Amino acid sequence: MSDSQPQQPSHSSRNPAEGPSRAPAGGSAPEAGGLLLAGARLTDGRTVDVRLGGGRIQAVGTAGSLTAPTLSRVDLRGYLLLPAPAEPHAHGDTALTADGEGPVSYAPDEVQRRATEAALLQLGHGATAVRSHVRIGDVHGLGPMEAVLQARRSLRGLADLTAVAVPRLLTGAAGADGLAMLRDAVKMGAAVIGGCPDLDPDPTGFVEAVLELAAEHGCPVDLHTDGDDPGRLARLAAMAGGLRPGVSIGPCGGLSRLPLDAASRAADQLAAAGVRVTCLPQGDCAALERRGLRTAPVRLLRAAGVRVTAGSGALRDAGNPVGRGDPLEAAYLLASQGGLRAAEAYETVSSAAREAMGLPEVRVEAGFPAELLAVRGDRIAGVLSLAYSRIVIHRGRVVARTSAVREYCDSAVAVALDLPRQGRTESGP
Image (cartoon, rainbow, N blue to C red; front, side, top):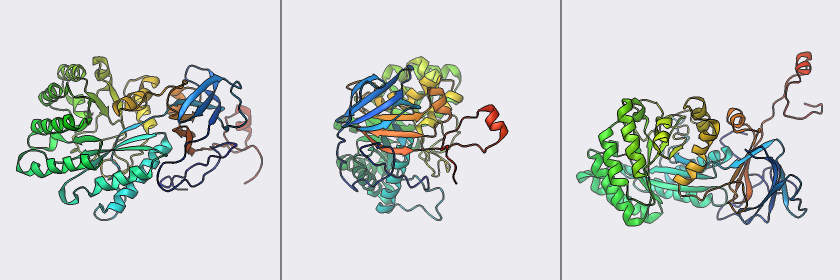
């Protein structure tokens, strides 16, 4: 099966993670009657059973203590159970276009297909919530936005998809149409207001227009910026400080190219204003002119008190033709190259990303939402290194499963070294 054609797992009474089946084509999927996750390992080293119901975690107990014959059961022996990641920076309207011949089609059905397929790919990696930035205006008008909103409706019960309206210009005579279209996008259902102030002739005016409209409608703001202009960042922080439910900016790779003292001042200003930064460790996105592929200085920002999240950005489009859209890869890169500990790196794609997206907190504790990811392994560092087999749980039911099998040929060396195997032991093809 191609990795661009994910299947939806069944919800059998024995083990919902055992095989694929088709879910309803539209509308919300029915809530699961209950699910028991058996023998899962937690990050603190405990091995537990977890009972889910009504979309939440009902109980967490020692392994074997929550047996319930009437519940569906998933055997998670050998898996680490984590709060599910979320994707704070996707581009579903342009995803999966890198290999196409000729101009990219923005016909509504094509955009909807791409946005849906991209969200399912990201779901398979573990992201049960996705924030997708959608370009509006120019010759395509609001067509891409309507297509992504339709994708959001078709994904209900599988993943939560949120649309960010991204106009190109908002100032001057040329920006009047963009501002009107941005208002229409919010009325249509865009839940977040975005854009690229760096590309507007008046970046400060662009930010002012976005913040004013966001305050009017009570929407969060999520802006693209390279972050290479300290003065522009200072003005943005001064204007954004009072906005609730909050402002995120990214990918801010330009902060890494500033002198240390200038970058530190900018980080302090962003922290004081409560502005979050979403970095893109896997590479840039096509929304900004490519000015260098350095990641934002995550350690410097965190030391200043900035809440840092990590996103995927481009998923096989012009911004990154080999983008994977995998939150665990973003965390891996922050741990391997960004100087973060493995647990800190995973936080940027899970709890920090959920907070930035306005989603409820998730812990593997009773009462919290059942948004979970089980990955074969026993520690976060190992999971980020070899995150092959995954089971994804959204609203209390298994919605995606990826299974990898590793085998070595029969040889004296393999036997002598007792090499680890992950696969069938019986003979056969």
